[in-house]
Image (cartoon, rainbow over all chains, first blue to last red; front, side, top):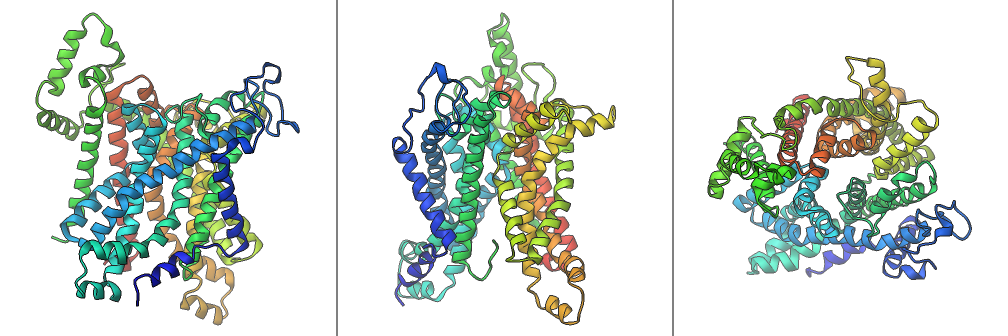
Length: 284
Length: 315
């Protein structure tokens, strides 16, 4: 049995086949395009000031109305996507960079290395995310970089535990034992035999982590500890729109609805992916 | 040894948490003494007061000594004094904690019955429209930013309809009615998030249980579906709920911090955020330390309770 066989079977299951999966995948691609090329999707500038169109209700020209400076709210949401995606993807990538090697090592080696790495992971996990973020922001200052750093740290144990558990199972499998018996080194076994087989499960939790990232970004930016205006993210728009619940409800309503929808769809995509990769236990 | 290890782990985790809080302050740019002294650092007697603080926390000593002093103080329950009000941090925390505890207890109390009901109905009607509807609703509850929902509630039910006071807090002993009215919107806001998480969990557990052999047998014996669902399936599915609530307590505290800010409740969240804004480092440190240790202890308590209730988990 060649080492590449399990890769194709497991990752291959993540290729969407159901209508819901296909729609979500297309939507995901669409959102990435919006983040990369916002100008394709709106004729307006995100920071366009128009004194004659301040806080206008929704109209055909401005489907979500205009904000306190007369900018199109939809344009601001569209331009905010870029930072949103950067934070969500950047934090998950940062976490994976540390968590995957650590999880492989802990799961494969066991013993002291495992005990110490698991202890660190459990310690990070025991900090409530928002509190940890507040503590770090209080000392490092609020910025996009701090946000990615904080989220990256809190995602590490979540990926680490998964990689460690999967590795522990795989180490006992015939093909890994066989490779070891044939003299393959630790590095070789981890990279060629174990890593390809855990990629699927790791990819499955990515949408869920991205949903958490979006919600934490929104919450922290709202209390002034996340993305700082005039930088545009959905969280900073929620902060700015705080003062317009009375006079221009469409403004906060549109931003909040988009944020909710985005994180709900990510959770949903995560459920679908989990079912695809583990058909025995359908949870959602 | 194996019996000792879990206790050792807990102590080790608490030690790491204390250390991380200590290190964070040292990593902050600037003189730790000035950070601890806060914005009043510009006053006349500043040198004198900086010297006091350096002596108090041993900041003129090498880092390992500073660390030993910090850990020693924390273990004695001495979290220092606010650099704004000079009050002991521990008594500020004690004053704010009841508000947060009420908020969380009431939210959990509201969310649990609703989640059990929704989750079990969905599992019993698996694959049908009602099931899909309930689970989509649960996902939405998880995905909605709670502060946004809270502000909408304030706008609609407090400012608009005038059903509830818009902000502030009344202690339950001074005015029970006013307390309920002030807590209603914050509790609903926080409970909605929890309903999302818990309903999904109850659904998965119940759906699993309903596929077990003994349920099939009960069905074959002609027991009513409702009896099966609520007597047998419930028993198995709901015990793990304890552990989920225990594990979610950290997330819930994070939610409470933001909900308190929205509704102007004078709890731990407001204490912490106020301290961050006014650069009151002793309060920031102390609050984070106390809450995190409390969360760890609650997680462990939930786990132990779960083991006590389900003998098969005692392995």
